Every structure is written in structure tokens, then in C-alpha cells.
Length: 141
Image (cartoon, rainbow, N blue to C red; front, top):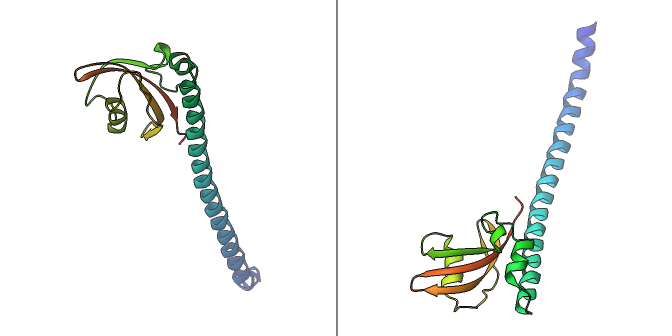
């Protein structure tokens, strides 16, 4: 008798499981879509934050002070974003392209690398070696 009842209910149980699996898949897809959107939003927020900091530098605030306060680069935060004696080949290509194309005192536009968004200020140039200050806002993963 139990087997007969089980066999009679089996199609309904399978249908319910299929329906639950379908809803679960829809929820996973919606979550993935929101994650992509959220990631895009976080990236936009990171860039906007850095643009605002860059504008403050352009308006005369100290880049060293702002780098100390805001950079998310642990390698240069304590030195006000300063890297000294930088030769080509030491940093990300986008970083170097921005830094090596500036004249001393110049400030780059905001640019993106694998680490996040940056802007740089060329402090000094000695031939093919530069001193550069930068601020990094990392992109949350």
C-alpha cells in the first residue's frame, strides 16, 4: 500500500522539485545580475571618489596630505603616495604611461589599472628615472 501511494505521489513530487529547482536557478541568476550591477556601481563610485580628490589637488590642496588620507596603496600611504627613483618597467603599463608623459608638477587624468583607479603627479625627472606621487582607490572585487 505504501508503495502504491508513493508511486501515485511521485509525479507530483518530481514536479514540485523541478519547480523548486527552477525558482532556485532564477534566484541565482538574479543574484548574479545584481552582483554585476553592484560591481559596476562600486567601480563608478571608486572613480567618482578619486575624481573628487583629484579636483581638490587641482584646486591647490596638498597631494601628499590627500594621498596620506585617501590612498589605498599600502606601499606608499605613509610617504604621501610618493615613489622615488622609478624606472620604466617597474609599474603597471598604464601607470607608467601616465607618469612618464607628465612634466614636473603635472597631474594626470584618472586612469585604471588592475589595482584600481589612480592619478599621479610627477614630482621630479632625472633622465629616465622619475619621482612620482599617486593616489589609488581600489576597486572592490
